[in-house]
Image (cartoon, rainbow, N blue to C red; front, side, top):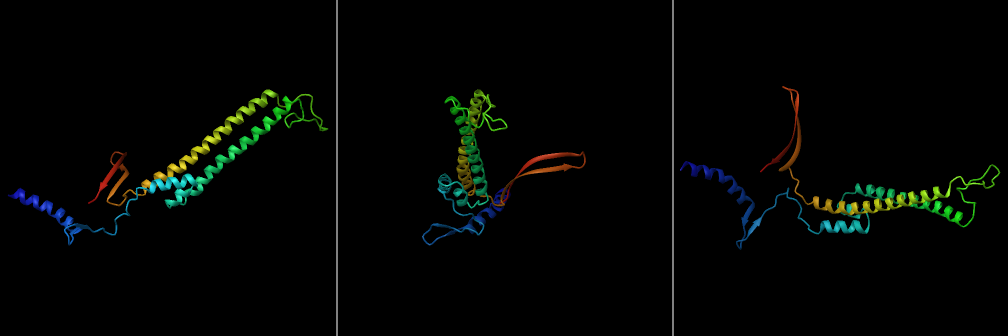
Length: 200
């Protein structure tokens, strides 16, 4: 008899809490009352929209997620990749044009060199093999810059998608996962750990 009474006393707060949140409607259906701390409704298409917007115009997905501070970061990263691609491409074209001039029999390219009177030297300052090596290096650097720029563009899309997913998670104070660091004064040791708090 006492165990039944104890069980009823333990279940009574749960039953009364459920009755506060669910009210029987006129037709018998349950009406759920949402309190002011409830989170906004989940939109399953929100991550897809954010990724689509970022694919059309980089940074637009971040604006859709209202993370405006990320837009300058996206454009700075993309601008850096594009700058290095253009710079490597221009340098590659310089060395390629000089090498083509030498194959055509001209000795007036910028890498040939001139004496103090401005006359072309008898031998080039940069050899043909050095021009070929420079073209290979600059071509490789240009391709790497292009791949990095494409990777940054893809990361922009992934960031917008993941951020839109994370915005829909419940991060209220009732559920918390926090690291803790405690110093034990008795034996001068430290304790590291992870605490999961669930309040109801």
